[in-house]
Structure formats: C-alpha cells, structure tokens
Image 1: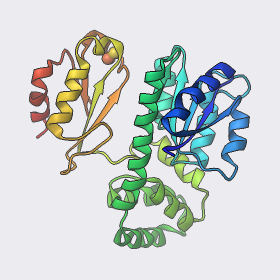
Image 2: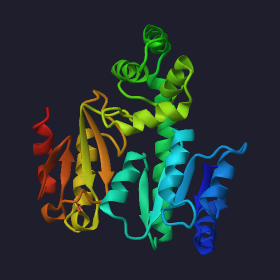
Image 3: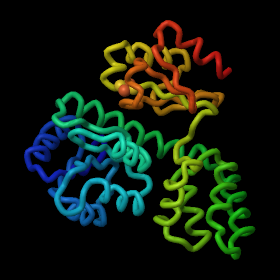
Image 4: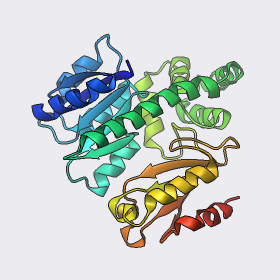
Length: 285
Ligand code: FES
C-alpha cells in the first residue's frame, strides 16, 4: 500500500471518483461526507498520511476543518479541493501548510499527480525529521527547555532557540517542546504556524518559488522549473546539499502581469527567460 488517504467532500460523486481513481494506484482511500465525520475518523485508530478536503462544505467548512486538523496533527499532509479560490483563502491555506490544491473540476491525472507529490512530501518529512534532529540536538533542546521552563511566556523563546539549533521546527521538535513544557502539541503547533518567522519545513538560505499558475504556465514556466531543478540538482520541496537553495512550485503569486514569475526570498523576478535562470541564481551566490 502506497499510503492512506482520507477524502472529505460533501459531494458523494467526488468521493466516489477519488476512490475509483486512487485505489487502483495502490492507495488506501477512506471517505467522509462532512468535516465532522472526517474528524471522527481521524480520531480513530487508523493513521492517515494525507487528507484531501473540499473547502466549501455545509456545517464546518474546509478552512475550519484544516485549522482543527493542524492543531491536532501537525504532521499530516493536506491537499485542498476548491472551485474559485480567492488569494485570501489560498494564503490562509498555505499558512496552514497545504501541499497543493486541486481546482474543481479536476482531471484524474491531476488528482494522481497531486496525490503522488503530496505522498512524496510526506515520505520526505518523516525521513528528514529523523535525519535532521539528532540525539545530540535532543540533548541540547532539553537544556534549552530546562533553562526557560519555569519562566512565564517560555514557549516563544524555546521555539526560537530550537529553530536556531535545528534550522526549522519539524513535528518531532514540536512534540519534544510540548512534552518538556507540559503543553498540548496543538498549542505549540498553533504558535509555530501563527508566526511567519517559524518554519516547519527545512529551507535553504534562499527559497526559490516558481509560479506554475496559468499565466506563467503558458509562458514556459515548466521549462523554467525544469532548468532550476537541473541547475540546483534538487526536486520541488528539496534543499541543496549545501543548504543554500530550496525549491518550491506555487500556483499564482498574484503577479500574472509579470509572467513568468520566479520569487527568490522576497524578490520577484518577472518575465523570466528560461535560458537565463542561472543569472537569477548567481545573484544569490
Ligand atoms: S499565474 Fe503566475 S503570477 Fe499569476
């Protein structure tokens, strides 16, 4: 089995087609017709690697569901299904750590492709957690926690020092901190996701984001991404060996007039020529 997936949507036809498309690919697919039903399933004994959820649902909507899900389960991967997303909802969903979103109606190939990408991220995060957080770091983190433990407002300074120590705050680090400070993991996770200076993913010194939204896509964004992958020798979601660059793909950065767009850290590079991606990277060497 390639991984377990929970699909949440109030339209039965979507649940059925996700099951029909993903099960032959080797995934174990469960479905829920509402966010409340999904929460019930997620609180059960069965572990899930990925949740694919609709945003518009009666009762609890997808956004509220994701907030609750994240608070309880910082590790789980989420893919959002959405009709016409606003920049606001995409921003909030990204802040909640979604891997990607599926615009409705989506094709079977987009569903399998997005699912495979999310599962890859899931696998890597499990591997990276154990590789990046060594025993020596665990000892140092315990010292940091001891130093701050009985002071008021100790969580933020502990998180800051933990991030300096590990480079980012993966779930395993958040769990250590929660245990050490006698706090629920959901509280630690809530603070980590609220402040943008905390990161849950390993990042290079410079984070490169390539827009694959429609306006950029038609102007050869895929070629730009392929070149950057080749030049950096990493795939999406990865960090170069020297930790200098990390690479991400995004759907629309809100600068379609400048398509194709690549953003490095806070710098927007517009009208990028695919053969000149090396010039962009050189500015950060
Ligand atoms: S599609 Fe690339 S910035 Fe909008």
